[in-house]
Length: 189
Ligand SMILES: C[S@@+](CC[C@H](N)C(=O)[O-])C[C@H]1O[C@@H](n2cnc3c(N)ncnc32)[C@H](O)[C@@H]1O
Image 1 (cartoon, helix red, strand yellow):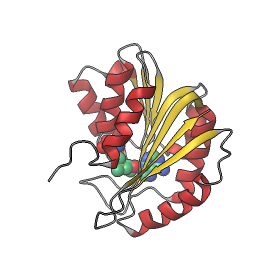
Image 2 (cartoon, helix red, strand yellow):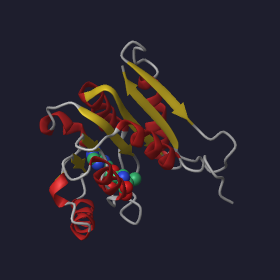
Image 3 (cartoon, rainbow, N blue to C red):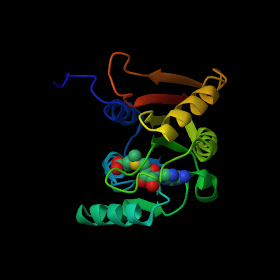
């Protein structure tokens, strides 16, 4: 049965991103996947904004392009078939939001998944690029072995971020079975 307000880490991420993003903003989708978050961000930034999206899978980029073409939104997106660990090679401006939806592509090859080393590199670069009061959301999936390791390693790092630089919040269901996804939110100060 669905609750009314707190169901999924991904929905909570979207609520916080919505608060931080205005029309014309530049934002990053660090894990494009099936393009659902890219589409959501395209809506938020409007036709004068820009969404920069990364995915290592050509299939993810192509599927997302199709989705955006259908909605006539290609002009507001820049899709990059490369790892988010290369973020700063492509983005040299401040951004108001960055979304990470980690793990593997639903419906795709489950062996191709994010891993903590490259995710950490991307998070560090992303924090540098966030503008004041910019928001980064990171949805972590500890239900598979790579995801469990990723959760452990990312939390070890995220706890050490200087509170003068950013607030870091962890939102985790504590009464659900099967290792549900958790959300970490970072707001740059
Ligand atoms: C859970 S899916 C993302 C779902 C997506 N946000 C959506 O709305 O459908 C995770 C994605 O991360 C991608 N990925 C894995 N490693 C990556 C990396 N180093 N850089 C960018 N994307 C990566 C995978 O290919 C996969 O498509």
